[in-house]
Amino acid sequence: EADGALYTSSLVALGLILFIITFIILALARYMLLRIDSRTGA
Image 1 (cartoon, rainbow, N blue to C red):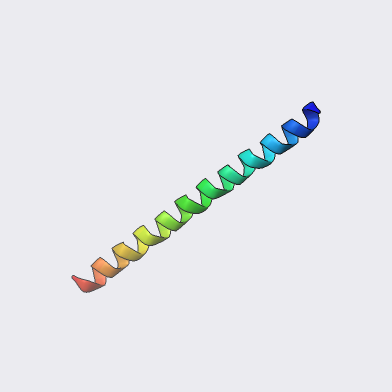
Image 2: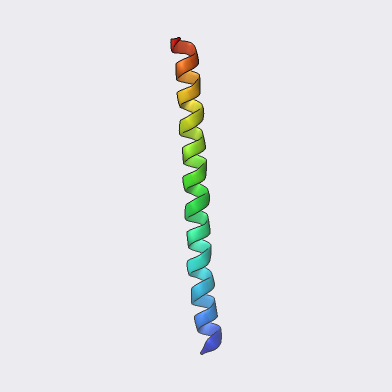
């Protein structure tokens, strides 16, 4: 029973970590695109 709970909690933690990493990558990409747009526009 404890193994099942540990497995489930580790899956949830892994999903959260992947979600956070994806969010950070998307934010960085958007920031880089904004910088490039402002550089070419100015």
